[in-house]
Image (cartoon, rainbow, N blue to C red; front, top):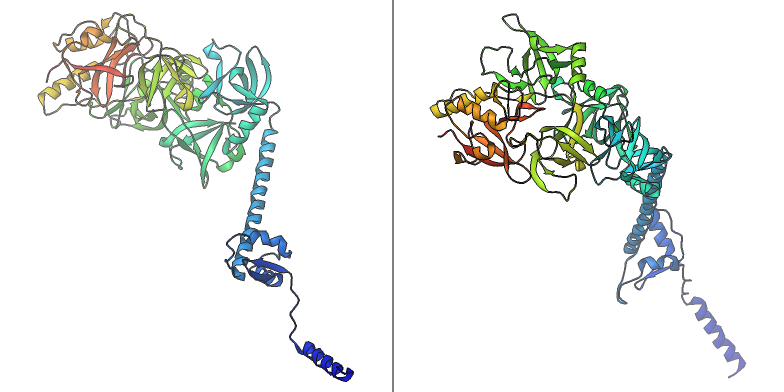
Amino acid sequence: MMDKEREEIEEIETEEIKTRPRRPKAEPGIRVHGVYIPNVVLRRALIAAGVLVLAAAGAGLSGVFSGGGSGATATPSEAVAAAQQDVDAETQISQEEQERRERKALEDRILSEYENLGIVNTEGGYINVRSAPDSVDMTNIIGKLPWHAACDILSEENGWALVSSGGMQGYVSSQYLLSGSEAEELAREEIRERAVVTTAKLNMRSAPEIDPENVIGKALSGERYELISLEGDWAKVKDDDAAGNQEAYINIADGNAEITQCLDGARRLDLREMVLTQFDNIVISNTGDYLNIRETPDDGSIDNICGKFPSHAGGELLETTQSEDGRTWYKIKSGPVTGYVSADYCATGESARNLALEGAQLTAEISTDTLNVRSEPSTEATVWTQVVRGQEYHVLDQLDGWVEIELDASDDEGEADKAYVSTRDNNVEVRYGLPEAIEYYPAVEAANAAAAFRNEIVNYACQFVGNPYVWGGTSLTNGADCSGFVMKVLEHFGISVPRVSRDQARSGVRVTSANMKPGDLVFYANSSGTVNHVGMYIGNGQVVNAASRRSGIRIYAWNYRTPVAIRNVIGP
């Protein structure tokens, strides 16, 4: 080919190259299931969504969008959504990490308040705080440390630890305390928002309002109660007291309490302080017998009697009033009863406070529906009866995790079998206190003559409430044991029964709790299953019985311990 022709061909090819559309340079981006997404597109989409720009190479984001089959496709909007989820996840992780760090800082600060941390580990219940390292002397108990409560261990010697908690110091059994890393690990789990009492004493109420009749307890300075909720000036807290209250309200206005994150602490259980702080205006029954509580300030008939106020029992004085005949009456609240008592048989003021200190007793009140009673302080021991919610029993001995209570005396030996109940899970509230009023509505005349006869029997029996128990005795005034009491009451109405409870349990005809009537006899057994105690059903879910030397003739719930038989010895 001639040179001129070659030049012309080359010139044409050059022009074609110049005019041919050029392939644009590949921009940085990512390929999602066959679809290429430039970074600039992804960046603009993220900016429009209010998300920080992820200016990363395609390889840096490709891992986010990997997966799917070879034929899968994705739009830029799908890729943006996936990227957004990734950003959200990263942001969420950061928030969780921040919360974790803040929680850790809070825990560290609270734990730093203890120089040598101890945590109660009793599998529920509480341990006693004592004024001296002696578990035999029951009078040295000055407080209690609840399950998983915290303390500072000041020293340890011979199985006892001197601790500080809740503004008090005392001795506790070392075997129930965790310390070191174990205590710290458990403590971190037990930090809660709590109301810490900052005033000398604070009423605990059943409702968030100031009403003298809704007071259900007292909280003392330094005590801590787990917070449920806040309602204005009121804190709703966990209570777990013996009356079955799972919650209570305290007024936190005027600096009465501080709401803060903390561990639980000790509660005081001092005789003098606990008795006097239970009342704002104390009134004491100052008679050797039971005092009738009435619905109105009038003692004209038995129809308005609503309760019995035992000798040296305590109550809250609500108001003083005069009846039409000029007599002075006190309106009181004691236990479950609110009503009027004659002022002639009551003490108030300094006299009442002195009587309260003299008459205070260590009692155990049951706070669960039913509770096993065992022959020894061990879950391996025999369960020989059960006690029920709301009943109070004299405490004979206190052990860590267990309480020995007095049930009633046997008419065979005059002494009751050993009876232990567990204090774990707040089943029992042990405190120094005064006897309280008992609900009692006297049986009144009924249309049916047979019912009227039974009512007459139980009304007669209840006249002797408060009189002494004497083993082997049969005197309704000077003293009787359980079987002697019911024998003499029935004898007054021409009904004869054997002398001893186990023989009485074979008299008459068997009835069930569903159809028992006032005047029927309710029997109880000892740990061997032998009938050894009896009471008379008086209606209203109650029995009257000669209980023990300490309690005398009293009124109790008919199932205060598990009955084994009910007999009708009166007839239809």
